[in-house]
Amino acid sequence: MIRNFKILFSLSIIAVLFLTSCQKTEPKETADTLNIVATTTMLADLSGIIGGEHVTVNGLMGPGIDPHLYQASAGDVTLMQNADVVVYNGLHLEGKMGEIFESLTDRGRTVICIEDGLNEEDLLSWENDTSIHDPHIWFDVSLWKDAAKTVADKLSAADPPHGEDYANNLEEYLVELDDLDTYIKDKVNEIPKEQRVLITAHDAFNYFGRAYGFEVKGLQGISTDAEAGTADVSSLAGFITERKIKAIFVESSVPPKTIEALQAAVKAKGFDVSIGGELYSDSLGGKDSGAETYILTVRANIDTIVKALK
Figure (spheres, rainbow, N blue to C red):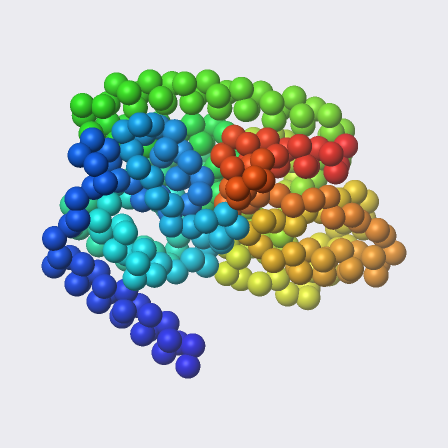
């Protein structure tokens, strides 16, 4: 029954793509702005910063939404069909939306895929498959700088009259990202090296670990599509007990039950580990969270990590 549902869902999306391809595209909101649709909250933030006054940005996924599991609605497809520019991460982050992006590209839409602007040698493998890469590149600020350059270049190509403004916005943002990178490194120095072990709900922080010197372990894999089993919980609980890890972390876009089960398993082995707080992994924070932008989100994460582990 589940398989039949998935088939019907896929057919309905294909039907929407066909029907909207036959329709006249609605005009953008004003003659002077590009209508951008971005998949994730991180990319919506980035697109707005680089685009500035020359763009209107709509995000498909709100705060706390897991992009690994996200399925586009018919309304989402229409929104993207009517956009001047669509921005997505790639690297299989939006794994259930691949056919939609291909259709948009075939129809001549400006589609910005962040993956296309990254060097393959800078990417980490998806678990044990060297042909597929970890999509969580935003946790390495140097890679996010590459993402910003990609958006600026593509927007300039799509809207040449405002190319200089996009370039200026990029340069200003790169300075802010350099400051963020320095802030992270300074905060990490507050944690003794032997305590720099980050354990989270799923493997979203491997780029962060590589960039800033953390050993990283996730209870689930890189994609939240695969659930952690009893053996995974027991194995990680043994690691925490042996290494006497002070804290583990829940994630804003993953239900906390898996980390709570891990905490209980550690306790059953005779060791107490605290839940050090909530980290933003696959989305930014919501309104009034203090983590509404990429920079604020990364700062909030490192502050939470350092407070719990130092």
